[in-house]
View 1 (tube, rainbow, N blue to C red):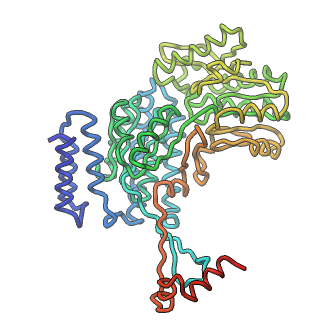
View 2 (tube, rainbow, N blue to C red):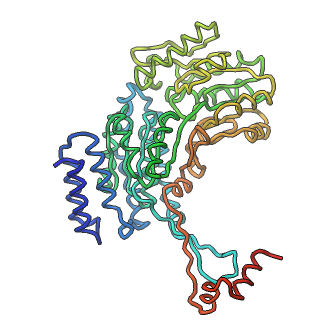
View 3 (cartoon, rainbow, N blue to C red):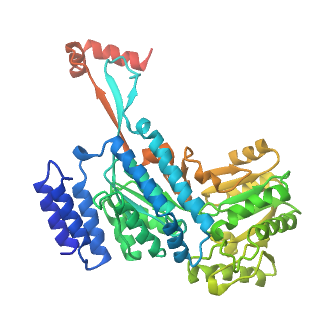
Length: 506
């Protein structure tokens, strides 16, 4: 038997037979058998997985908080056990991915996120008692934090482990079922994700579906109870439009051109290495990497030289060093190489921290001074190890430059006077911001992470992530007093008039 319509019929029948206990062993065995049977296509398996989770979800069978926490801790143990396999799978998908980058940004950050959730889950998930009704009516009030149901997670290729597991784990912490669609550019990581979740969860709890753009399109058109997408603004717009047909709430983690601003008192020797770290980490393939650098007039050359020197110290031989990450595909590599060629053809100063290696899809850390505002470097999200540097006349000029463009996912400001840099942050907007640092805010779990405007909407990480994947349900329990009942059912009565006058005020 395969998925598709046949699977839908099976799940509907099982649901009727097990309406009071949709997660019983009979249902579970039949579901797993259907999911593991040879399918006609990825689309069939997607439909089968969605229908299976939809049928399996019931508010009568939401796992308790202790069960959710126990399984999340089992997931952490499974990640630790597969540590070397995760490193190898991601590196194979990239052609070469720095093991240190995978260990820190994929494995360590993911484990830190899940452990943070486990520590705080009781406080987040238990009903929140509300003490003040705000009106002179007796009663008891509280807010229940309930799962939404079946959550879809569409994860990208640039951090294929972290950006699949963290949102999935957060949704599971909320008591949801989760369906994950990894990027088709990272098939080995997708296979590992499926194995990892299977170590801890049944496929009626978490399932991983694979496939290309056709599966991604069909995935976003399903009637999820929440849909989480990380990727480009262009694709995110399509995902939001598809989800809108079902009124599915969406979290969009997109990108954009994140600016980095050097204040007038910034120090190239002190601050440039931090910019180089954020820009060239993972070959520049980070959604919050600095996309361009603004420096005071007359200082572009000093900062350019300092950034290239810092890159050379970290990656002495980017063409051959296993610590330097390759570009994900030939298409992405060729696009970045063309941007550099266009800058050289325009007569711009281009500095590189090593040799290119096209066969290995290696582009060395590169700086371009003074690209035109309408150039590709300044109109497209770069998503690679190329940093344009532009000079500004004064801080008002820098603020105008930033605010005239689409709201970015991140903004970075550097200066000896941190308070002055914070004032510049306050004059702009972005999904997040860091003063005297880059990209590390992603690892701070109690800070919400999300975009604004075209860099996305919604947020996750920590408590904010738990709130994103749960429904805050208000409950009011009224006492059964005759006087209260008589007041409510007689809106034209003396007591209700007194209450109305009190609320309006005189």
